[in-house]
Structure formats: C-alpha cells, structure tokens
Length: 323
Ligand code: ADP
Ligand code: TRP
Image: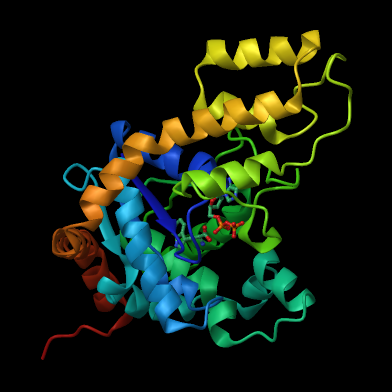
C-alpha cells in the first residue's frame, strides 16, 4: 500500500501539527510505503516572502527527519524538486470545471475574508490533485480541512479516465477523525492564524512562559477542579505516561492541588518528551549537506515513481507523439 502525505512549510511546527499530522504520519511508516513531501509550491499561495519560505522549508525538512521519518524506507522530498507535478497539474487543469474550484471551502473562505484571489490560490486543489495522482497512491491521510480537496482529486480521476480509459488511480481518503483537534493556549483550536501555538522545539524558557500563562479559573486551591476546564490536562496526557496523566486528573479532582502545580508538571513533561528529538535535530542540523543529499535522493526516487504515469498521461493527451 502506498501512502502519501504533504505538509506546507508555512510556519514552525506546533503541538497541533505534531499530534494531528506529523506523529500519525510517522507512525504510518509501518503500514506501507510512505511518500512524504514538503509542499513549498503550495506555500506560495499564502506566503509572499522568499526568505521565510526557504527557511521554513529547510527547518521543516530537519524537523521531520528528527521526529523519525526514515528516508530509507520512506521517500522524502521537496515538492518543487520534482517540477513534473506542475506539468501534470496542467493536464488535469483541462479536465477541471471552474465551478468545481469555485465550490472549494478553503478558497471561498479566503475570498470571504477579503483576500483578493489569484490563479495560484484558485488552482491550489489542482496542484494538490497532481501531487496525489502523479504518484499513483492508494491512501492519503489528511485532516478534515483537506477532505474536499481530496474529493476534487477523485472527481478528476473520473473525468480524465472517462475520456482516456483507466490511466489514473483513484486514491482512498483517510480522514483522521480519530485525531482530536488540539486546543491552543487560549482554549480555541491551536493554529498559527490565532497566535495561540506552542512550538514543539520551543526552548525551555518559552515553553515555561507560555504554559504558565494559560488562563485558568480562580477555583480556590482546596476545591476540586475539572481536568477538562483548560488544555493543561489534555496536553499533559499526550506527553506523559497514561499513569501519570491519570494521577494528575485524580489530584485535580480531589482538591488541594492548584493549576499552578499542574502547569509546572506540564512544563517538565513537555520539555522531557521532546528532548530526544531536540538532540537528534541538532545533530541533523549540523550536517546540512547530508540533509540536501537525503532530499536530492528522495526527489530522484519520487521522480522514478511518477515517470511511468506521467508518460501515459503525455501519450494519452497527444503531448508525447512519435514521428
Ligand atoms: P495552522 O492551522 O497552524 O495554519 P496548518 O493548517 O498548516 O496549521 O496544519 C497542517 C496540518 O496540521 C493540518 O493538515 C492539520 O491536520 C494539522 N493540524 C493543525 N492544527 C491542528 C490542531 N490544532 N489539532 C490537530 N491537528 C492540527
Ligand atoms: N494542502 C495540504 C495542507 O494544507 C498540503 C498538501 C499539498 C497535501 N499537497 C498534498 C496533502 C497532497 C496531502 C496530499 O495541509
């Protein structure tokens, strides 16, 4: 089974990205052949700053390797290093009704928020369909927000195959409904756009400062407390052992234990949880030429996977022809 996952380099990896996407992706390595790429071309639709895109792309490559992506058993590359996907997207564009793209929520929401749309933003789902279809993948695990984009890819398979025969492979979506939405520091969904994130590689001082500032109610110390009243316990259960998480909930419910104590436990557990990854990250970052080699080799392998299907599409559309 071939699984494909893409992540946009549009900021530093936060706890929500980690639990909602990166951790399940890295765990999926045992289930089949994982293809993972950094979708820097997609970032161009929302970030208009060369240094930031380049910096986040490099950092994300290092972070994903540090978190345990194995570049031998998985294929790991930067989207733009296989520019054939842009060519592929062009073929698909000619089978993409404008109305289908106009109905996409991500596009509609941005327009409703006053963003003046350009063609890149409008065509975002077509490039994403190319990422998926060119590599002939079976499964695409994504969060709820990407469900509609996956449906576009599936509809394009029907439209293209109806015209040319069975050339494109229809991917099965894997919507991660089981992965809970991670709350941000303020209790809303954690998101870069809300400024309520905590980076997984934030330094100890920042982790402490942000966690200690999480708003809590003013229940007196001796009173029982609801462990779900704020994100503290939920976060703690993701970075501590199940027994430690149960004990913390019991102590909060019993009373005589304050949120300040719970926050300190969370700070310690959070830092300890990411410590091994932080060490690994430093090692990887000290050999950037090695990272480049991994990504180049990944792009070569990705290109070899895409080539046969691309050739079939070129031939079917009359772009590749014989004298
Ligand atoms: P942000 O909302 O911070 O801009 P992105 O949209 O770039 O994050 O998220 C990349 C992936 O990380 C998404 O596909 C989504 O599945 C996952 N993700 C982001 N925020 C959360 C969250 N709060 N809880 C769970 N998963 C999340
Ligand atoms: N649009 C996805 C996101 O914002 C990233 C992405 C680009 C992607 N191409 C993809 C995800 C192909 C899965 C498959 O999260």
